[in-house]
Image 1 (cartoon, rainbow, N blue to C red):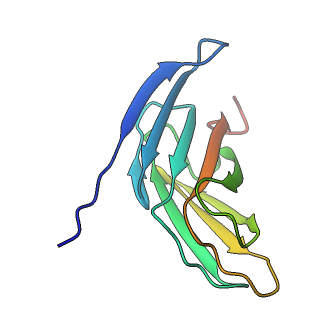
Image 2: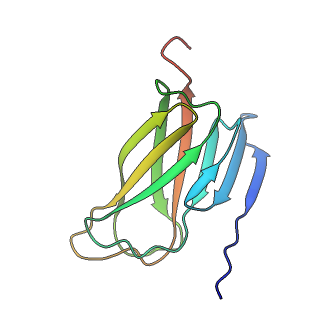
Length: 121
């Protein structure tokens, strides 16, 4: 029997912004302007896509949300942000393995930053 562990850390970064860190595929991070999410261990094949859904009450369909990706425990494959699609209350982030042949062999870390809630802000 496997056990899933989710970690949730909340702290202020050097600019006083609340940052939340979690480990999961679908994450809820209400009231967070910036989040750092570590995926579960992945074996995403070359050219395949990993999808992460972040639920956050501050995100609106017209929000500007930026995402970046880096290795966590994975040492192979080449993760790249392929698409960021905000909706009311959530954002879907697609990470593609753009390596020609190697699959991911561990975790990746996705940083998400809510730049603004709407064009008027």
